[in-house]
Length: 332
Image (cartoon, rainbow, N blue to C red; front, top):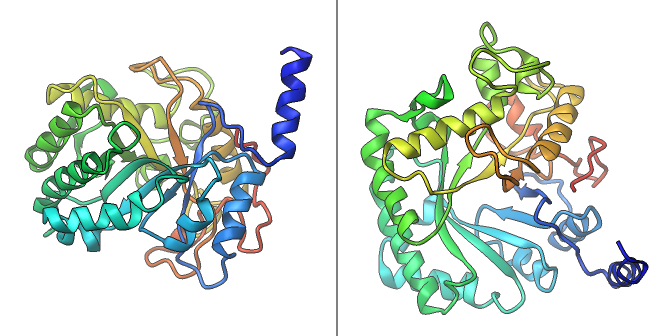
């Protein structure tokens, strides 16, 4: 790098300009806690750590206000409890005008996640595609289609088989649900968002899955050519997309994380190892899709003490509520 360029970078940095490379990971901002910092403090923490992407799970106007001028790329969620209201074209238009168009001048929206982990048997399953279509159309009406893509976030339970990864296929129950959604994404050049958690696969299958395979620390590859569970999970999703005729739809990993306490394998040491190795790993690709980087969002920014579910759910934070880092992690 030339001395002139180094000087320019230093000057920009001193003015608080966030310099994000394609390789920087994002971090999900969940706010289910009663002891978390203010929205502005949170955005400042993203900036001071060089975190160039954020996922918001609902239209949090305090957070959107704080993100103005930050240059941080944003995934904004239409939460599941608002899906029904945007299956109506007028409702979708109102939603986009209020939460996207009103901020788009100086907030860098990248994706709208229309629903999170909606399963084929859920009452809301039939709402996802019409909601997605309406949000997409409202983005186009706001002349933002060049900047923002609409998608939905799935989890890996939609797979009927995931091993070996080349045999990955959506389950019979999920196929009829996800295929029209993926076809719509393909038509519009949008990625599929997927929440990928080697931790949960490891906890549920400790007899057959080694901790080293889940933490990227395994020496060499297994019998089907995989060194780690993250790649195997992602490639099984890619194989499933191929089998429904959509090999070109890209997957964005919209969540991946490891808890620091609460169940088997959950420790500060293991979580720190997972996050450090994941950040490094996604600069490249997978055996099936070797061209990286893999756009990835770590879950999550903070421990959330009001989160429901298993004890581990409250211990996924990269930072403690007092903003101190739980792990030594370099986000670039």
